[in-house]
Length: 536
Image 1: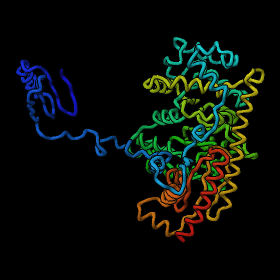
Image 2 (image 1 turned 30 degrees about the vertical axis):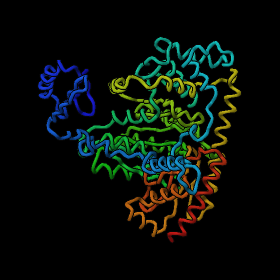
Image 3 (image 1 turned 45 degrees about the vertical axis):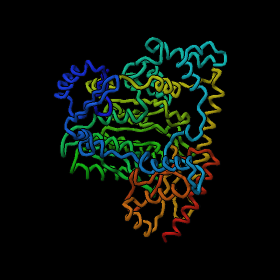
């Protein structure tokens, strides 16, 4: 018997064959890099060991030898504070006494993990697609069965387990195009411009990858909002592109100012080639919803300066303020006239993870790319084909998001009740969070117009700033770590999203159930007052 274990080659056989084995060992020794050759008789005779050189081989992959672009990647949403939260959870399970009984993870927009219930119709369609034998089950409504049947008919072997085309299942792309047309008041959308993706993140990373080129001063610059969602800075680092920051106006409810875009662009042209402008609307982590006038100004700026627009619109269903309305960049672009809609290159993104469905785990999403050069479209499909296709179950979930029950169908009333319950609950929690934060001395929170997060500004005393420096931490990281250790509440420091020098923030999701959110906010209030008192 020949086996390999723990870096040694072990040969076990009857004594009569040891001589032959030694010959094998001499041959293997010439090619086996390091280790020990061991021989033993089946009768339990003495073993003979021969070290090859007595040294262990150095690791090929180390921090010094790994891809430096990957090493440079940071993703605050799942950074050190979240790792510590996991450790504290383990400590609580082992019976370690803490001043709290549970860790409340308010660091990420994971709706179902926070207790939000799935939309029944979506889960019914996915269940039927996954296990078609359920088509005979009378407890499933007819409209869900018809949706599932259409999806399966477009899948190879009528199975969700088959690959789709790299661009995604055709009938689902057609439904996405129909959804966009209805959303945008009849402006047509072409299924060939639709690419189904593994969540919106996959689409954003793919478009950025195909956009990045050049060296030194000609290296692609990518303009991103500050504060930003850390996916953007992480993707830019991984691609070794140049991050170009433009700052949102906190004093004006995180508004986007075209003069600030112009400042950032002209400054960046001294050291790179800015050619991409990223917009997050509604904002993450800031929660602002852009006005139509602002979007028109941004599109004109992109047209004037020759920039490729990326519109991250995954929170388009999450608008809570009565004074705000979601306007898609695609719609505004088309209504600005042919000079714009035939020239400005735009990629816009949506997802199953947010909105009212909160289906993060299915990793469903799409991007619509308009005015892309035909040759580049072919290159994009080629690049996407390397990963074969996005998860087909996620594609099916995206289909339900864009093609929900219609008023005449039997699932409609239940679907509308569930959808409105989720969105009205989020609107209530957005208002509650804003009001309570603004009652705490030393905390200021702008209106939560949309999305799923609060991004309050926090006052940190000089003594606390100095203590953070001694610990080699950003001041808001020190604050958030203390909050975690003393209350069990896990939020993300603003430094992970970017912020103006001398200001401090944290991001927290408003997704916890109302009573738990009230508890969370009360604990933050008590902690903040104690923290200010301790370090003043």
